[in-house]
Image (cartoon, rainbow, N blue to C red; front, side, top):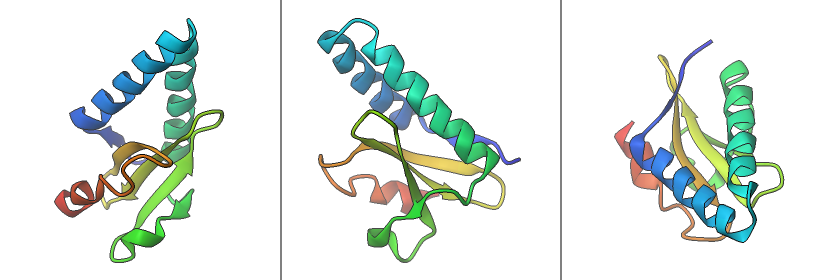
Length: 104
């Protein structure tokens, strides 16, 4: 298995989203984090899982939906690791993470 790497900016995105959900209902932020961690474990076990992101045709960028929440984990399978590019909301700022894919 390849290690799954999450950049600081991605971890910050998740923390911000979890904090917002926590203001909506106590414990909901923790539920988001647990759901994302389950997706990350799935990606680590099978890096070719998930759907290709059509807008990133020039790269092998994939995404997996986070159950119960309007987010995808966006990632790219590299030779030495799986790099998570974003924990992206379905509708907000589409493809804002694209520059991150170029940097990997």
